[in-house]
Each structure stands twice: as structure tokens, then as C-alpha cells.
Length: 359
Ligand code: PMP
Image 1 (cartoon, rainbow, N blue to C red):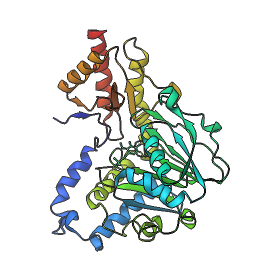
Image 2: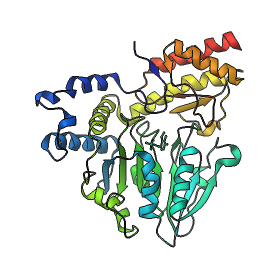
Image 3: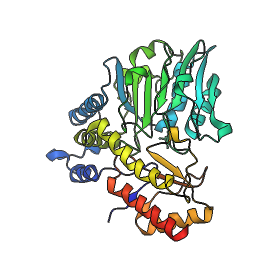
Image 4: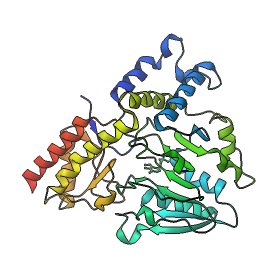
């Protein structure tokens, strides 16, 4: 029996996609060759890749003046590439520090240039976000950076700041395609695919083309976004398997109502869990209710012993990945797009039952 997988990433994939990969792994649609054996400069890959990029654009409505492609290196490499390219020497960039991932990005950027922190959630233990209407870029900033969903802390921007002419850059690794996004408000959106989009290995990049006009000089080839944009991500060998699987997940998303459909499901699934938390004197959410994540629901039991017991007993029921990140403890249920509705409902039922027995 398949596990109910609440892991934060790598994470659950649509079963249909896994089966399609299995059916075609050895012989890709009767071509006598596996996709992972085919040259990335050949027709078989190119056809698949073009379709993947075209589905990607159509699901989100990516405007024509944006480049879309995939890179390797994890989302983490972008923490470096972004400031290398766009944190122009002698100038500064604005960063919001809202949890582990934006902190890592800001720390890396600060090694390469001047970082101006316009919000730091440290005093509140990263359980809340600034009011987007109040977030304004500083004079002369090269860009404003945020992480749309802090996977570890479980907080998610519900709307985004208006940064005017200052480019807005967002790490959407853990909530991408869980809701519609107006791409035109961002200069760049990127993320690792290993949560909502597919198996680890690829990072998607959506970048307004005019961003390339103002880059630091002297970039090495791989670090230069212009190189990747020019070749649609094929400057070097791309993560072929991951891209193939992402293409299939995108088709699955299209068949299941697109970004709007994913949002409806995310509201329902997270609703199951938050309703249990809110209706209980046992569970507690540390997160500001205004910014609760629909993707990563973070919660606590009265004691750490009960939390350990929760994880253990859930595992016996086939529910895995519920332990909170090692840096913060507690419990975390990741409810990505591919997590079946029934699994979220089962977790909610298990939570109630566990409370009844231990509350
Ligand atoms: N940003 C966010 C929001 C993440 O959740 C993660 C990984 N969990 C990363 C960045 C880093 O991604 P990677 O491991 O692909 O470098």
C-alpha cells in the first residue's frame, strides 16, 4: 500500500505520473530509447522539453517578455546566482528575513554585496510576516527579495508587496502552482521542483527578459543568467529526468483544474488540519493565523514526548514525514498538490483520535 506522504520535499508525486514514468522509462513511447538515454541536443528531448515549457507558460499565463527554463544546482544555487548577477557593485538589495530559507538567501547575498534587511522576523521567532502593503523597497535598491512560503516555519505570503520599479524576486520553491500568481508583478520567480512539481534535480526560473540588461560584469558562464536565457536552459546538460517528470506533472495539473484547481484543493486540505488545530485545546499552531501556510502546516502537541508519540503512531497508520524540521522541532504536515484529499482527511481524523486518547 502507498504511504500517505506528508514530507516537505522530496515529497509525494501524483501516482498517475509515477506510473507513466514507469511505463516509458525503458522505451519512451516506442522509440526504442529511454528519455534518460537521449541527447539533450536531439529531437526526442527537444520535443518533450518544448511541450513542458509551453505547458508551464500556459498554466501560469507567463507573459511573453519572460524567459522560462530549468537549471540544476537546487534552489540553493540561486541564493548565490541572484546577487552575483543583480546585486550591482556599489549598490544594495533589499531582503526580507522571514525564516530559514530567506535567511540563507540573505546570508549568501551579504557575502557578495550590500544587503539591506527591510524586515526581520527574528524577534517573533519567524512566526509572522510584514503587512505586504507596508513593505516598500528602499531608494536605489537593485531588487527586493522574499520567500513566498517558508517551508520550515510554515508561513506564507497571501499577497505580495508592490515594489514599483524595483524588481521583485521570489523564491516560490514550496508553494509554486498551489495558487495562481500574477507573474507580471515579479521580475523573477524561481524554485526547486521537488515539492509541487516533480523529483529533485531541477530548478525552474521565470525571469523578465529586461533583467539581463543590468548584470554585474565578469560573470563566469554558468553563473550568468544571460547564457541560460539565450539557450533556454540548455547551455549545459539539463537535469533530464527531472524535467521529463515535471512535464508530466504539469499535464496532471492541467487536467486537475490548473493553478485554480490546485488552490481549491490546497484550501480544503489545509482547512481540514487547521480546523482540527483550532477546535482543539491540545494542538497549537505557533503561526500568525493571517499568514498560515497552506502547504506546510506546522503544529505542536502539549509536550515533545507526545509529539514523538504522534510521529510514531502516525507512521504505524502509514502516515510519514510528519516530524517538524530538525531546526524547529514540533510537527509539520506538508500538503503539496499531489497529496490526495483523502490523505489530508485521514490525517485530520488521526489527529482527533490521538487527542482523544492523549488529551
Ligand atoms: N527555498 C525553499 C523555500 C525551500 O523549501 C528549499 C528546500 N526545502 C530551498 C529553498 C532549497 O532548495 P534545494 O534543496 O533545492 O537547494
